[in-house]
Image (cartoon, rainbow, N blue to C red; front, side, top):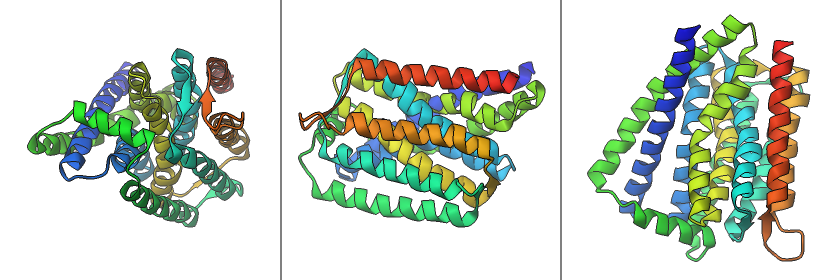
Length: 324
């Protein structure tokens, strides 16, 4: 048991560190090739912060553990909204000025709804996975077009200033990309091995481990970057991290996992985890889109507290159910 725990802890630490190096290297390298800041923020950073979920889910699926893979997706999206945005808003209310982010909010809601619909029949097949991957490809095309077309946007401005503060030589940036990717693979294997071992030892399902330990662990890069962004007053980046990561998770990460290893979706899982993920996404759309007449969405401290409370209640229920 101790060896499994150490594997999870060391794997998570290495996973978070390598994801950070991958994001830094990718962003700096993209800047050298004059990629628009908006595209870097929404695609490259979004992919980088979702790299832990991607590698962990892909490896889990390839090893015949699809419950960890999908549990990681559902749990990470719940964690990103309820824990990370809740904590971020509690520290400093998050205002949504960017036109692009306000477009991403309904897109994320729609994508989550489509994924829930595909899984409602109790089976996540390769056909379902390819539908999500196709939607992901279309979304990336739209994002690339937005990044090339728009030059003045709140999110793009904040991303440009962030890139200027962290400039790296091209050679060092590329080295960070390669190193980050290699360590992501190694740390993901350690994490999956330890998580499966803990689940077997405690007698709980792989899904619960994926929804809790693995999901929170792989969401640490989003937590760190969002808190750092809010401390610097960069609310657009904080929210952009969560939106980009959740879109990658529900479309790309779930799509890749399902394409590798289709899996059954129990009814209890749908009405507990998938429905909660969908409700939290809808709530984020409602509170963040700005229906109060100001034209600007705002996630205040009260709403942040409600999100945090929802995360605590959900986690406690999961643990009690697993141990009961």
